[in-house]
Length: 258
Ligand code: MG
Image (cartoon, rainbow, N blue to C red; front, side):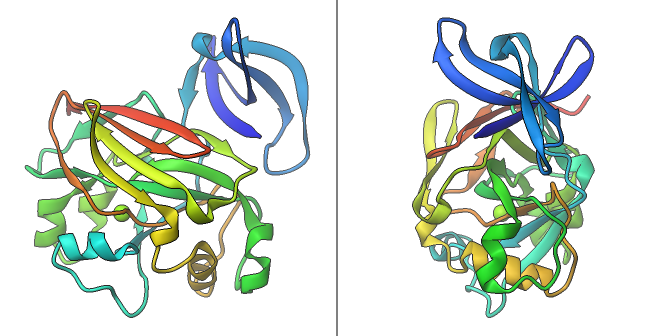
């Protein structure tokens, strides 16, 4: 099932994305909370009539760096012995169609197409064999990075945590085998990144075990699983799209911060 979060007439709701009929994609509004028990209300609205919001409101977004060998190499980095984890704050999260604001302290903004894992239940110290039980679904992410600040500053809080640096969406796909999906980024329609999730150095199971050794994950929390090779610059006016097989396309425009 594809679950979107959206606003219509000033109200915010979750809906299941269905079909491709004469009205295009339709949202069946959800009664209840997607992570817990919910039912479809039967009230349907065309997707074209709503504004999509980030599909989840995470308590935290945990990023993983250098999880594809070719990407680590393209930036001149070694693959680390233990996964590199970092946070993106909740204020960095935007949805599909929202604008990425070019930060004033950077002159080298990069896109990073990533598979995002959405957590479905509160969990800590998750054993490998239970990882699938704590995952709600998957969505597309763009780990937008101020590469110059990342190189200049020892910690990545500003480089990867500025406002609008975490586009997520367009929705969460709950029925998906994430082990070998094509993942792509385009800028203004031109392909920049193309990889497969099977190229990840550490699997999703490895990452959930590693992160929950340290911290409790809550429903709606997000793990960014790293980016394949081909990262590159974004400029004001660009439109960047992240497409993952079986999920959909996350599209954002880059604007000057007003
Ligand atoms: Mg990244």
